[in-house]
Length: 182
Image 1 (cartoon, one colour):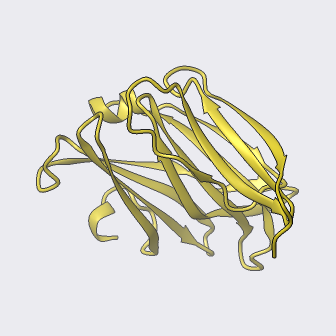
Image 2 (cartoon, rainbow, N blue to C red):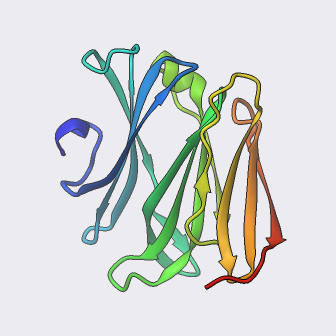
C-alpha cells in the first residue's frame, strides 16, 4: 500500500491522481483500492500540510463499496475536481467479479476537514444512467460550484453542477443536445 499505508485496507491501490490546490496551497493525492474477496472498495485521499510535498501528509479513506440493484459494487476510474469549498470525486460502479456496469457515483467532500486535519464530511450521489463523469477544477476563489460532464449518447452530453460543497451539498444535471458524433 506504500504511500497510503495505515489507511488502505487492501494491497491493490490504483488510479492515482495528484493536484495542487492553488487557493489552499496544498497538494491533494487521490487513489482507489479494491479487493474481490473479501469485497472491499475505497477512495484514499491524502493532503499535504503546506505547499511543500516533502512534508507531512494527512490521509483519509472513504468506503466506496455500494449495493446497487441487489449487487455489491466497487468504485473505478475516478474523476477529481474541486473549488474553494470542497472536492468532487466521481467514478463508475462495477459489480465485484462479473464487472457488470451499474452507473456512476459522485462524492462531494468538504475541504474544511481536510485542511484542518480533522473529521471529513462528505455526501454521495448516484447517477444511474451516467458513465465517466469528469468534474472541473475551479482555481478562483469565488465560484460556489464544481461543474462536470459525461457523454450520455452520440448526440447528448449531460452537464452537472455540484453546489454548497462547504455545507449541505447538492447536485443538479441537465442533458444538452449536441451535433451527432461517433
